[in-house]
Length: 213
Image (cartoon, rainbow, N blue to C red; front, side, top):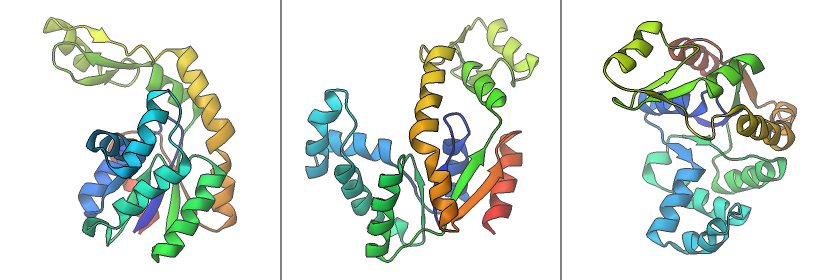
């Protein structure tokens, strides 16, 4: 099973990838995590990316592809992988397609976690962390009992600075402009699988498994 996960910020890609990874024993290949690891370990690709990233710019595509190539060559990726966070543009998708064909591991499908915009905004703007327990909660979707448990234990519901409507709106604009075209890209190749990403995590995961079976 070789898949790319697509979806807007807050659609649940990371959560679903972790469940799939545990069930199917295939790695979640998160380019952001791999890039940070390569930089911290001082690998050749990490050194190339370090100065660029520290200047606040995105790592060059050729560096990210090089890191993906190295990662997919490891034994745990022999039976498949879940690509999360790459590609983000049509050009990256073309480059990835070329790389996977070269490795003899073509993509099986690109899974789009499709979700209503209003629900997405509530997921993102409603996120809170309990200052006492560290538990992740949501003022719109967590039960009142869970929210009260935090405050009654002496904790506060803390919102991340970047979980405000202005910042989230910008992130979604970038997604619509740069990443949304990937939906048409994979659809034109007959490799798009769309699932409804609203509802509880377990419900979404059940839909994901059914779509992939």
